[in-house]
Length: 297
Image (cartoon, rainbow, N blue to C red; front, side, top):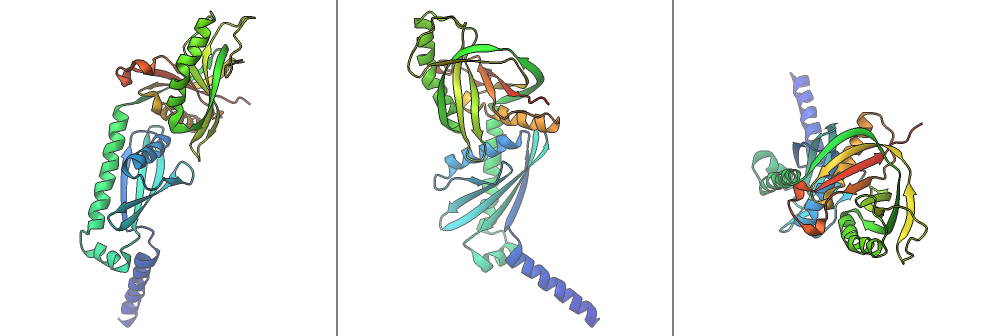
């Protein structure tokens, strides 16, 4: 009997040490979302900018993010873990830690529905409503492997945060189109962007904003306008519907598709646009075709 009591005591002490001093979270929540890991990653950062202007989200790769939220005098740490169940389903685990309540807060959490627990549940539900609302306003359809034809084009260059991609496009759309039309250059398709650099850790990009044109010997020489061509390429394709500000959601969908299907890709997307954002309208009717070049052995 003494041995049993001793064993129970040891287990109880070990559990107490784990709960009070080792356990990484004070509250854990799990939700699932019908979208890619990358879309959740970007949505957490967007939600944080709207919800919490104090501190930016930090990340260790796409799947692990840390967020600091202040409620009155309490600091709560949200550790987000994103796991792809398949191409279009992500499991989200949120480990939440109260940095200010100390040992007494941990004890209260065992026996009662504390303000910390209530706040944590409410905040997770807030985010879940936010991501569901976002997904209602966009649509990503993976179309599979295809070919992107060769094009000669005129372009401007942009680099900056991934979230300002559409601002750069709108800035240069009228300028570049105006230069070409006023100089009687024949357009050969709708505008597109070609990503030349994508830093997923820092959410920064560089790209060419372009109009396909018919090449001639008398193209206008204008500051900030350059000319080049892209080769015919084997690619994987997605169709995106929604505001072009968040068309990068299709980039992540294509990356997941490539990983699932063991396709080696160059992570520098190309987007072809079929609507003018300056004209407004129902954003879900806006269309872009998005491509990732395949690297063939």
